[in-house]
Image 1: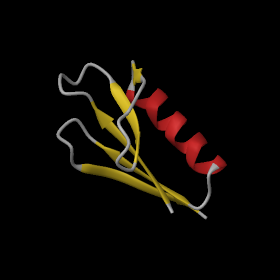
Image 2: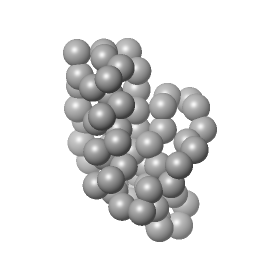
Image 3: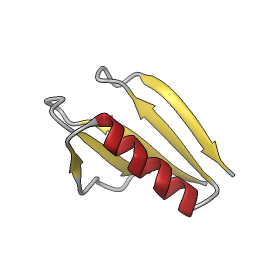
Length: 66
């Protein structure tokens, strides 16, 4: 199962979509844009799970795509 995470950057000025232990490559300007990208990737690469973190790095939401 692929694991995608939506995480804030260290300054909380943008959001990353991270695949498991791979370094993120693109910084998104908003959390909602990053969530949409993560969901799209998870849908295309089933089975997958999306874990969405808040600005304090706590799990805010989890979505599974089978």
